[in-house]
Image 1 (cartoon, helix red, strand yellow):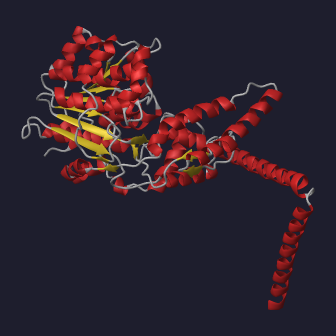
Image 2 (cartoon, helix red, strand yellow):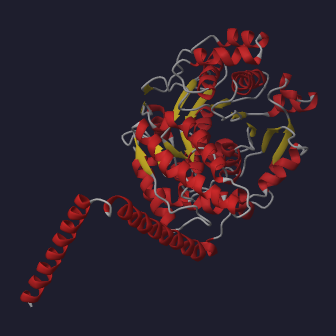
Image 3 (cartoon, one colour):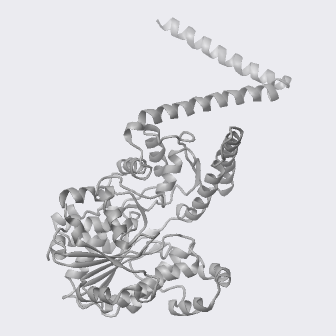
Amino acid sequence: MVTIPEYYEGKNVLITGATGFMGKVLLEKLLRSCPAVKTAYVLVRSKAGQAPRARIADMINSKLFDRLREEQPDFAEKIVAVNSDLTQPDLDLSTEDAETLTSCVNIVFHCAATIRFNEPLKDAMQLNVLATQKMVSLAHRMKHLEVFIHVSTAYAHCDRELIEEVVYPPPVDYKKLIDTLEWMDDKLVSLITPKLLGERPNTYTYTKALAEHLVQQECGNLNIAIVRPSIVGASWKEPFPGWIDNFNGPSGIFIAAGKGILRTMRASNSAVADLVPVDVVINTTLAAAWYSGSQRHARPRSMLVYNCTTGGINPFHWGEVEYHVTSTFKRNPLEQAFRRPNVNLTTNHLINQYWIAVSHKAPAFLYDLFLRMSGREPRMMKTITRLHKAMMVLEYFTSHSWVWNTDNVTMLMNQMGAEDKKVFNFDVRQLHWAEYMENYCMGTKKYVLNEELSGLPAARKHLNKLRNIRYTFNTILVVLIWRIFIARSQMARNIWYFVVSLCFKFLSYFRASSTMRY
């Protein structure tokens, strides 16, 4: 069997969602590790008055492409931006662009989707289901297509405890739902959405399940592979450790913890945190296309599903996440932190609500009061409110656990040669989690917040200042408690004097024992 770079040699690749988090990593890795690839067509829509070519030009000028730019200065010549809108009829492709794509594309990576968990059902259906249907229809018209890769999510079937590498029956008939939503107004759709979702927590997982079934039903004689990543985080190794460029998912939580804004979170410490590095997902995706494409003659029609998650291979718990995040940000603090990092996990809803009131809302209220008194605009309560909304969306995933079957991922790994295993490594058994979490946290500091490491001394000084303020506040609080509750009660004073006397006698005995010893 040919190697992965040899398979991609001379191939024309089409990528949707190339400006998204995973899409841009896929594009960078493909061009860097498969330098003989012919052309990478990317479907991009105009946004905020910026044309597709301009959006791609801005994207490839980012830090993500620095290594590729150094190794292959002319890599941009292989990227062709195609004006398209996946929500429009026929993908809004011009006749000329459609003819170009159908006549030369060999491999399709369909990564585009809305990842907003609580997207209105109509919008989620439009972006996750109907767009997929249009892409499958376009793929059928491609004369030289070898494989169609659909990027789904490991949580498409989160209503099950055991998730195997198969496409499960959908919650409803997607065709009937599409027809029904056409005549329903938004208010009626919002009313029936909870009933439709059933045990699924949001419209994202619901529509991704429907999209998988659609691909299975409408793929015809196409070679299909479905890749299901779980919670996608910062890069493990490539293009450099800890690269991340957004606040989505764990990144926002880590930053909030590092800033001292997030102090409590409801999560099951026994639940596996299925955090998978983005380069692991991309390497799995590229390898899946290689395997299905190179096997197309022996298996003219195949459909393989890959659960790309660390849960079944290398379990990692939320308690460990919390420990590594707080310890990393205490050693390498974020600039202008609100408080010192310290996150407590709890499984109990009432205890979590108590700590939210004490550790989140009360300090935020006092800080906003201080801002008002100093003539500045209050902002911390708004930040806390946004944080709580984000935590409520993620709570389902932090408080549940699943058993993942990863036989196909293991099979794919075993099919690869020694060199491919190095270049396209997705064996998370080799991942050192403590090191990865530290790189992840430092990546949010460097790439998301754009904080330079030269600012660490000032950040550490600020953190020490916050520590001193905390100690001073606690001391004042103890004195006030003494004055209010103890000084007014004879019984309390007697207990206090007894405790102090006992401590004094213990210290005296300890000192006498030490003197006699020497």
